[in-house]
Image (cartoon, rainbow, N blue to C red):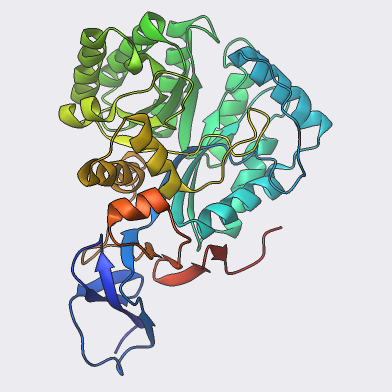
Length: 400
């Protein structure tokens, strides 16, 4: 035999019939019952557990978490600008270390079954590129354990703070994976200039785009239309994600569906955190139009709010709840958004649990996939490229 071979016995892929799964050289080699286990380097008995593909944390902020820093009462006001300015102040006062904090959250995510993360990382004239440097170090440390994509994110504004564009350019040169953007009308108050800048950077470095769009109703719709136009003009179909997209939850459903149809033609993805306090995109509308929806935790216990646990299986439950989904097939689709949907949006190669897929896998004890989402049990086992990286909800090494 060439290469290390592992067999997972008595497993139910996506809750289906019990079978065995052979892993060879980081990939799934075969799926089917196997009686001779003596030929394998390692045998794992799943004992009827459900096998899921690695969960995908498609929208978070690794550099901002306060995990492990003790309880910090929330201080920010209710507006977006309040949150941005308060965070900028507290980041300095509390000496938030992007490397230490990002590694803590990434390890928590690993224990919860995430094998890929897309993190928006602040780039501004106050923190400079320290956030990128810290998260990039975490990315390197955990390279064999979890995939981390870094979005260069102008949280404080791209054009309103002179010098931010140059810092964005710098981190993209240094290895940021994605060009980020933010509310071109309400933050930079220059939608043309903002989109010129981020699409120009994407073209210069050959990178995809992921832009936060908190703007509501007609204002958000206007910005979204401009993003769609730019995507088509730059031939970036399939390479643009709009995060939050609250405007798609507007009361004018005809307008929202018109936008969704345009998103489908431009192959623009939508990332949601299923927030309970804003209108959100509706799963069924996006699914019917063929728009890829992915999901993430957003900030985890940070200056924006004290909530979050980096559990994407639980996030799938929130996504189903937010859309009033109750039937098994509806709940299963919410999980699809947090697995296959995320993999498509992040352009992960060889993703899944079929022959030829990379062995990024999660085992959970549950009766069905819907039951796994609703109960989000402790992850029995997490594998990355065929290597066990977490057991019983805990990363195999200690967090910093």
